[in-house]
Amino acid sequence: MYKSIACIAACILCVAGCAQSPAIPPPTACTAGPPLDLTRYMGRWYVIADTPFLSEHDYVGNYDEFTLLADGKIDDRYLGRRHDFGQPVTGSRFVAKVIPGTGNTKWRVGLIWPFEIVVITAYVDPEYRYTVRCMADGNMVWVLARDPQMDEGAYRDVLARLAAMGFHTDLLRRVPQKPEQMGQPGFQ
Image 1 (cartoon, rainbow, N blue to C red):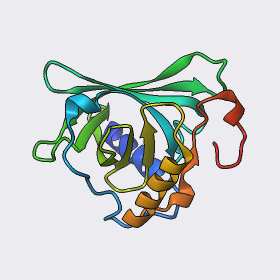
Image 2: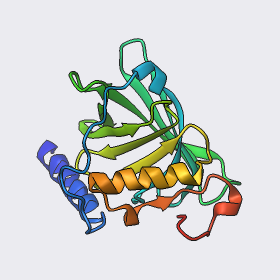
Image 3: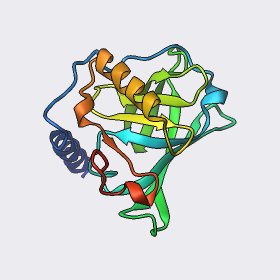
Image 4: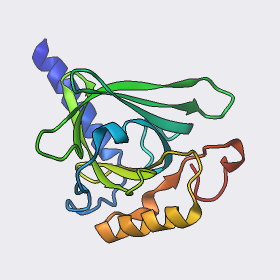
């Protein structure tokens, strides 16, 4: 019975991996940035752009909410509205653990026991207004900001930084954070 469940889980992960875009960044694209002040990093981060994947491609107004727990783990909530802004906020709740010795930049995020992914903070600006997070394999990237609207100049700077790191920025899609952005060029 347990072997069957493990086999099914492995097949699901394999299929999910195949559903990703064929243009895979080089393994070095997702590297950790400087150490983070974890307390300062906590709070709400709006998803400005991401590499859309199955579970979040039809959400708008997405945001992450990070809360440091007493035991050192992080309550990681990924929330948004499905299809349009008139829908209720829904999403997922995960528990993240900082990987020791990484300057708080690498987190193991528990999806469904026993599966975890490693999410890396590749960049955060000195004022903690913008950040770039990515999966360890570089396939998925999130550009996050403290405010739901990111200055266009700052967004272009982040894209240039990502391109210099080796990411395929043409795969990024902006996430509507207000109704009038829905359906606009470059937005999901």
